[in-house]
Image (cartoon, rainbow, N blue to C red):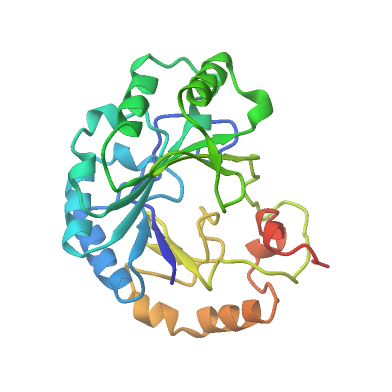
Length: 273
């Protein structure tokens, strides 16, 4: 696996209109996190700490990073950035490979000056950690975000990268632009059962209720293969339901129910039927 998404909490400190997370309140225990990460380590080294939810809300966040440090994980941390100033020791953790700050999350809400000040301080850090500033829905940014984007343009000599929609500010610091995506819903229009995706093959998600599912967009576990509270990850990945779904996807067949209603996977296949 290229990456695992471990949802340490589905709680969030924002209520963004583009997000489906409206009732999040689960927090994985440190015991479960220690257990799950040990199992994940058998299959991959790269881990994210979200599906839904804001990971920095977890009351044991630093202890979680200690666990990842000890197990030599590469952490790709995605956050709305609101609580970054309350975690000054974040960069002391060797597991932190990449920090992505979703600035679009604070669009059209009142934020204090410390938010951009904290981001500026992070940009100026002398660190090997990759910093990514994410901007979505560029045509609808509020004045705060537009002004900050202009500050970045004026302060840094921005250059292209090999990655689409990604631009370099300085060493290890990037801006990423993209359109908002729609979270898949089983009640959405059915788009067919043919296509490609990175879910199942390259990534899996573990929700904060223990369900192991196909990707980071299946926040309700519609495509769940099993439950880590009942079975081991190894057993789940050797199960008939997982192996059948994996084989189908390798043959461009989307056999899992949510996949047929997912618009995001169309990005990977422009020849769907």
